[in-house]
Image 1 (cartoon, rainbow, N blue to C red):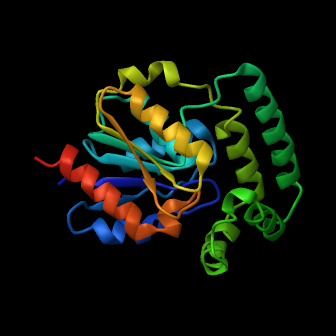
Image 2 (image 1 turned 45 degrees about the horizontal axis):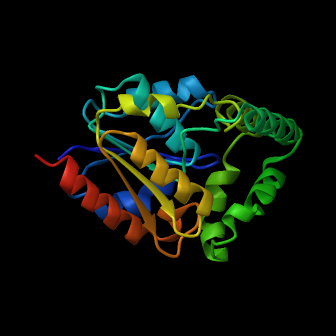
Image 3 (image 1 turned 135 degrees about the horizontal axis):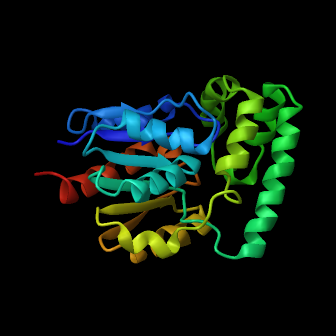
Amino acid sequence: MPPVAYVPGFMQRASSWSPVADRLGERYPPVLVEHDSYERDARMDEIDATAPEGAVVCGYSLGGRLALHSALRSPRRYSALVVLGASAGLEDEITRRRRRSSDERLADWIEGREIDEVVEHWEGQEVFASQAPEIVAAQRPDRLSHDPAGLATLLRSAGQGAMAPVWSELHELSIPVLAVAGELDHPYAVAARRLAAEVPDGASALVPDAGHAAHIEEPEAFAALLDEFLGAKVEP
């Protein structure tokens, strides 16, 4: 069976994928992508360097955007693509410019703060409101291990405002694609359905009772969706 390369999101480490990878590891060997760089293109290079030829690449949020762009950049390298809580970008130029400005202000703020203050701010976002306190607490050590200056660099280079939309390129993806979102994460649920419809071999799915980080909030349910997809699309 092909290995699955798991790509973490913003302010995460590779271990954030362990609850899913451990459930599927016997059938699909896990490759946890641990980034050393905070710059977008270098992170994409790290995905390519870490994931074996023919692997399935699976990314969450910012990591999902990077996985999508990596698959478009090297269309024959991967056997399938899975994105969670990610879209193909902001199409409206005004919206993207405003988001880029917002990300730039946040990056400036992050650079001038200690990591514990940055993490406290990040954990207070509405997008994580569906996470139980113990789930938030379990992720904190990995978040605290990051460098604020590096996080600012990543936000400036790979934030939603910084990355060009690729909706018009999705038809070039010949590999199977699964786009997933948490049931409670409404904007990305819409994006998942559209993304799946834009690729030649796409499917979308929602994780019940989950928000943005469905692989952490409901790892068993996400693993079941991934297992079903892989069994149908990539097994010999």
